[in-house]
Amino acid sequence: VPVVNVEVFTPGCGGPGIQPHLQSVPEVANKGWRDYGNRRGLQRLSALFSRLNIPATAVVNSEAAKVDYVAKALASSGWDLGAHGLNNSSGNAKMTRAEEEAHFKQCLDDLEGSLSTRPSTWLTPGFSVTERTASIAAMSGIKAFLDFVDDDVPFDIVDTETGARMLCLPYSMETNDFSLVQTKNMDARQYAQTLEDHVRQLASEPGEGKVVCLGMHTFVAGTPARTLALGESLERMQKLPGVQFASAAQVQALVRKMG
Figure 1 (cartoon, rainbow, N blue to C red):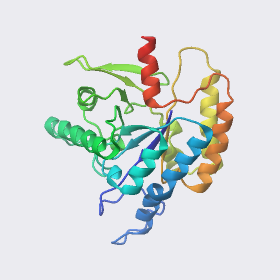
Figure 2: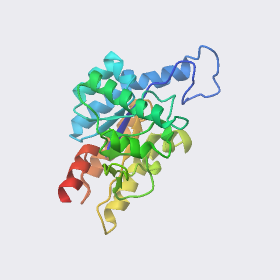
Figure 3: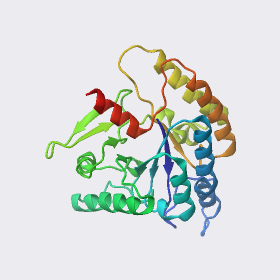
Figure 4: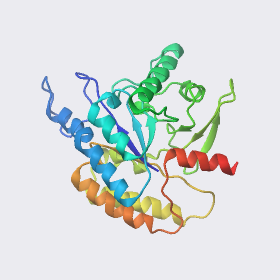
């Protein structure tokens, strides 16, 4: 399941950086690096997945979807559109229950207004969660939940108060471009090969159906060199026995159909 993170960051609150030592105010280099992802990286990834006929899910900050060229790129992508909070500068961790419920509602309402579809997939920005996040997500109509990273097999989460059910699709940290590129300092070829090796190994293992989320960011995977290497690896993955690409919504629907 390719999962493309489409993010914006509150001005003056910082964010990921390619040269984090740059701290001047206003800071234009790292901000521009992040902004490049939505201006060019998003369109590049969309074109790649379209060329390979690979479905994908975008998890979108609702504030990003208000940017005209972002909304247009997402509308033309054909991707499954999921929710990723308001922005990537403010997480849920310190919210009260009422604040978190309002956060979910505002995010989903805004995305529906911007993209003409109400998301049913959710990833919390920066994994900044509370003990109530999963419950509130289920009560908010979320059907596919990406906040947990601890398995290779999807599993159900059931809200004890309402009985609302969500499918958790494990969002591996080992196949996330931020982990591999920004933390482990892999080059483009190493990044793409690691994804391929991860998928190849799981495909060779017996047992239950496994799901691998390939988490990527428009400003990391969406750069020219990484998109080139990623595309070559995805083409090889498409030929692996037992490997099928799908969106989060497609996986959720299939699991429910199978009972």
